[in-house]
Image (cartoon, rainbow over all chains, first blue to last red; front, side, top):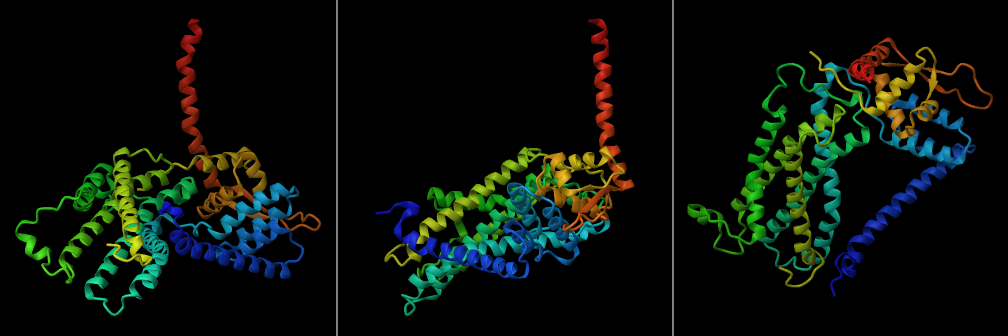
Amino acid sequence: MNNGLLDPAIVSFVFTPLVGTVALLLFLWWKRIKNNRATLPTLDTPGLLLASAVRRMPAERSDWGAAMLAELAHLQHPSTRWQFALGGTRVALFPPRQGESVQTIMNNKTKSLITTFRSSALISFLIVLPFMLLAFMFDIVKRLNTFSLRNALDFIVVFGFLWLGLAAIILILMPIVRNIRAGGNVAANPVLTQGNAMKTILTNPTSAAIISFILALPFVTILSLLMLGIEPPLGPLEPLLKNPDPDQPEVLGSLIVLGAFLLAVLACIIVRAPIVRTMRAGGSLLSHPMNLMLAVVLLSFFTMLVVGLIVDQFPCWIGVPNCD
Amino acid sequence: MNRSRTPSMQTTAVLLALAEDATAWRYGYELCQQTGLKAGSMYPILMRLTDRGLLETSWESDLPVGRPPRHLYRLTDAGLELVSELTAPQAQAAKAKRARLRPQTEGA
């Protein structure tokens, strides 16, 4: 019987490794705290927690770590100490980056964009990894002898799209969540409209929305057709896109879908830029409703893609025969 | 030309709290209590304000017995300037509101 997320197969193969990983991380964290207790015997648990986190702070912020520890030493009440230590630990683990002058903000923006891309790619890869391992262990290993180029391409396409879909979702949400958490602090706000160079059409919310809409159109169309079960009329391109041999990979078709997908990801970045910029300046999430609506629609499509892929492919990953 | 940037509500609260007695050195927990912000929000704001040169920092010189010296904060001239920029529109708005209400009050 299928019980959705509580299906024994899902519980055994997905949640067990996840719970195991979390338990291992907690164990390592506890071990580190215990080691710290050996070197800092006079501290209580909130003190140890903050001291452990402060040790991880970058050198340029070490004064601030000492400041938080000193402040904690003056607090008496246990609940106040815990509250302060937990807040301080969060700051110590994720401190704001060293202050940037107005002149260097634009250069650092590129760096920040790369960091966001890298983080999104890494986080989504870590999410997809357990599924890849499942598919490898229970599907691919079983039929290694009959594994064809077509199977290999299918594997790459499915996990590639799953990875990109998750990365796109994280890419849209990450800067928005960061800004909500930062509370749109004054110093976190890059000066985006300085000079004429930045006054491009991409900084205008309306033109950003129009460009995003055009870029996302192919992906949205393809995914909508697939969901509705309509086969798109290919016309003269049919011999190119449809391989008569079912065992041969449809490389061109996959590349076109991938191109449409990447354009949609680009559309997401462009459409959310005015929202993020306004939020950094202390504005509201709802200040550009058209852009927000488009971002939500794209987010929904990416979510449908990811959830659809997992639901459709999961039986194959856990080795259910004839799952296609 | 640089666009003038509006600080968030939390940052403004910290700036105003520090501006209440601009000459006094304040410590982190005191500011947390005054503004109602948690340490997790307060310290990033203090760090960023310091990075921007709006805040100067120092360490407590009157060492309390058995406790480490606390980190202290005070607005710089640039910080005070920003506070006056922030409060000026509010003061103007209040003045305009008073001016609008005056004829009605006088008429009543």
